[in-house]
Length: 536
Ligand code: ADP
Image (cartoon, rainbow, N blue to C red):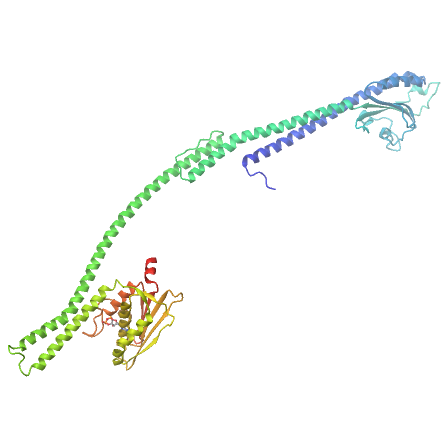
């Protein structure tokens, strides 16, 4: 069983229990000692009474005037408080009894006789307390009885009338019983008084304990706990005052000191945090400025690079066109092309056309590159785009001796994409793959499509068994105008355009390649491009 959980209740209960035990024990002892005291007083009375009966009947007994002796006893026995007066002779015969006894001969082992006849040899002289006994009556009351031996005196043994032999020490026994009603009543009164006092003491102690506990323990503890809670909530401006005891005063003062120090530490911490925040803000601002400058510089550098590349790329064919035009200008006379130089003139003209076409290609590639950020999306079947692109380039690939293998996933989900941009991706990758195998007698290109496990993305793979790329080349292939192809054959914008388109579709492009082991381009596109982009 669990006891009370509150400290005040525990204190009140333990104090009350301890005090109750002490008061009850004290009461029991007081009642017992009062009972013993009263019994001792009664014992004196019964002894005096027995003596008085013995002395007032002495003369009558000596004269063997039994009637007179019994008369005296009868008179004494009638007094209030005397329960019985009996006389037994040596054999235990009841010689006289008041009230009149039914029993004529008592058993020597009976209560009244037992104290002297307990052993074979009866006692002759017994002290006063031993001769007394307390008998519980059937009516619930008690009787204090005392036996007084009647000794054979010389006057008796020598008398002529009825001489008892001299050897007989005890002639009989006087047994006087006093009612203990008054003692019992007094003990009862003391008991009631003690019980009342005990209950009152317990009640008073309980009430005082409750009041003191409340005043000196509960109230200060509640205030302390409230103060602790406020400190936990960081309300550090409320000191606590406890004056009920020295210990609590000391506790309150340590608590206040702790609260004060905490407040100082908190203020310092806040100051530090504020300073740090200011510093962080300042640094962030500086970093932002630096980043902007860097971005600006980077943009300028990229623009510069791009411009230089574009200028270089366009300048070459343009210079060619200019030179050829000047040559043709020199050949051309007023009356037309001189005879015999037509073929030369036509060759120059063809070169002009080729160079101009090349410039046109560069310009259209550049346009594609600059347009990459704005795909016009619609539900697109990537398999259909692959099929269409392959049929467009099939003639070219045949000329390059490239065999194309297709492994398209029939259950490929449609993607939200710009179909013409995707076509450009497939075309650039397939043509690059074909060109990478040009040193082989027969090149092999494998184009495949599939969906990822949760069908949230589609994957396009273009694999070739061409020359492959070393890592340093692989790192640069997506840079605009990076090419390893001969002058006039590659512009270096194909993969830059592919990369731009794939990123604009929120997709990803990976390359696996090693020299002599072919190359794999893997393009991953989200099925729901715009939704995925919004989520991102
Ligand atoms: P270009 O084709 O005009 O050179 P690209 O951007 O398409 O420009 O390609 C850049 C370079 O990447 C190519 O010059 C080539 O060196 C390399 N490259 C592209 N695709 C492959 C491939 N499948 N195998 C090996 N190298 C490749």
